[in-house]
Every structure is written in C-alpha cells, then in structure tokens.
Image (tube, rainbow, N blue to C red):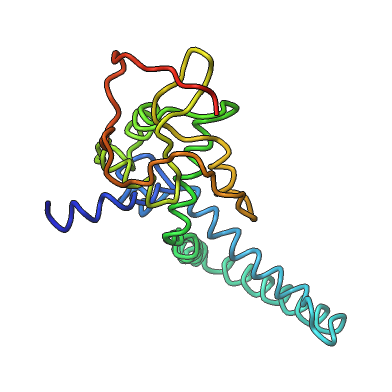
Length: 226
C-alpha cells in the first residue's frame, strides 16, 4: 500500500461549503453564497467601527465617524454622478474584495472528526444503535467518501474515536451484528464525555470478525440484551 492510500484511511476530505462538485474544487468556485458571506463580513466590520463599542469616548467617536461616513458617501455620489464608469469599477473592486473575504476557512482535524461523528449521529437518529453496513452505505453515497471502501471507512471511524461494538441491538428482530451505539456518539458530542462502556468492543484491533461486516444475507446469531 502506498503512502498516499495509507493517508486516505485516516481522514476524509473537507466537505465543500459552496457548490456540489468535486470536494477540492467546489469551495473555490465563484458562488453567490461566498460573495454574500464576504459582503456580510465587510458590513459587520464597518458597523463595529461605526458604533465604536468599547471606546472610552464612545458618544463623541460615533458622532465623528458617522459624519465622516456621510461625507465620504456624498463625495462618492458626486464622483459617480460626474463619471458613471467609476460605479462599474467600484462595484467590481468591491465584488473582488467580498469574494476574498468570503473564502472558506480550512477545517481543522478536530472539525473534520466532529463532522464524521455528527454524520453518524444523524444516521442513528432516534434508534439505539446502527449497523456498520448501514454507515458504510450511507457514507459512500457522499462525494467526500466515495473513494473509501469499507475497510478505510472503518479506520476513519476508529480514528474519530467512535467505539465499534461487536454486537448491537436495534430492535428485537435486528440484532447480533457489529455497529455503533447512540450513547457512545452522544458522549463524543457532549461537552463532558460520558463514562466509557465496559462491554466487549472492537477498537480496530484484529479479531475474527474482520474489517468488513458479513453480507446482508448471512445468518445472524441473536444475542442477549446488554
């Protein structure tokens, strides 16, 4: 196995914030939401400067800055009135500035791990647990994980701190297969993690079950509830 393929076993590429194309390119496209985010960032900075929060002489400063903004707006209106082409140039420059200000911030490793855990939590929903095969199927339909097989997805889950139980019970008729429990996911998402379960779990070490679950048609042995 090459170094590149080994790196893919322990991380998922960041999900694009804009667009629906390839993960590595969608976030860099000129997208209206990115321009809107940059515009809101500029507006927030301008508003914070105008209201002068925390300034020792706030009342006087707000008056001065408001008057300055009014004067600047008047001069800009007169300049555009005399030379209409300045409006197009100004609009273009502002659009470029907003596009740069709206650039997505690359997620950290902890952010990516939390996204994976939150994704599993969404899949579990109100169920007490979920089978690994269902997690594999759901993740592999997403663009960010299409390149990962079951073995690599299992490595991703373990790397994110998700406990994989050798046997979980979803309902009286659906039990006896490896999976993830909702309580474990809630503990990872909680500010104060819950106690680590003491029952038999698979943390990624070698075992007789292997890295991939048996086919759906295999006979499942029922187990007693915990």
